[in-house]
Image (cartoon, rainbow, N blue to C red; front, side):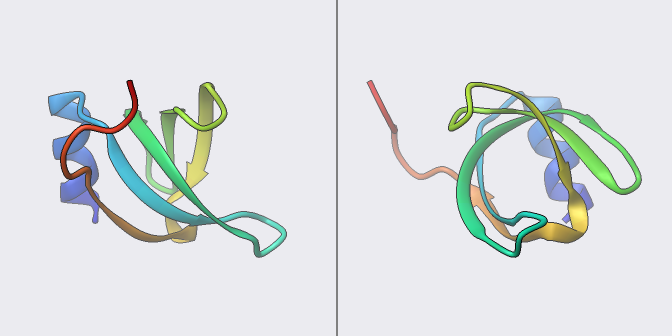
Length: 71
């Protein structure tokens, strides 16, 4: 996963993640990784429209976006 996140950050590409928050609720997010740390990533979240921290251990699934999304 770290290699995937690093490549996405270097390419400045949007990726999709399924993320479990502190309340054990799962959400689908489209993000762009800004900075990669040991336990967290700093990323722009297109759902919240702001920069957010995501715990790497809470990312359940991840992948590239297929096709164009949005307007």
